[in-house]
Length: 256
Image (cartoon, rainbow, N blue to C red; front, side, top):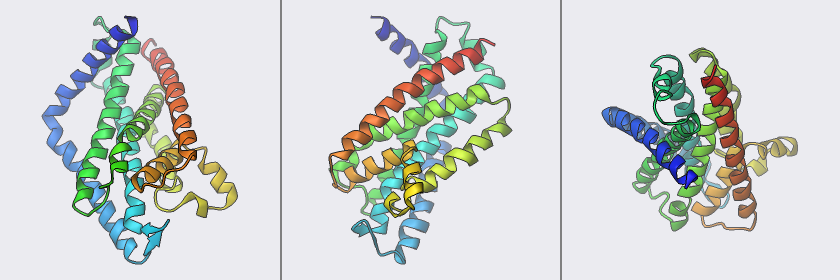
């Protein structure tokens, strides 16, 4: 009963974000669709004209699942940082919400869910675009949506943790340039991690996005194997841990 009540209250926070989003949804969706189209055209088909095959499929087919994963990560992370920091320090939304019956953990979970929702929205938009290019049409690609939501949740948590630590907008660039961008480059988005030097390959498996990309690509290309269970298990554990850390960190920041 208690967990059900927390979920209901968290969904009310989510719904508040949705109401605000409806006012600017066209711009948001346009950006979410336009950027992946450019990436797919420049890399999937531009670079793909020179790299004929990778992993036994065309480069566009190889790159498309990676694009789903990296875009989901980016959208959720930026919502978790810039979106939440604005509510914390500028619009003072959090200050107002803390005067309502919603508890701080419910408030945080609601915003985590909103960040994950925007991330999965980007995945749906990219999947829709992919249909026009003959990409992402397998049942495995559709079945990977829960994994992509888990990816969005993880990076929504990372964004929330960053928000709890930074003191101004400028400081958000440090984890973005130092963690998120390198992760998008070395997590199997553009090339197989197996092609990396053994030392870098080991490091790449410390990155959450590597497990997401490996899992989603295997599902999208119908290349199933037993290691996918291990990747999924790592992501679930990571999501649980990061959820607890983000709630603890953000609660401490809001109570200052």
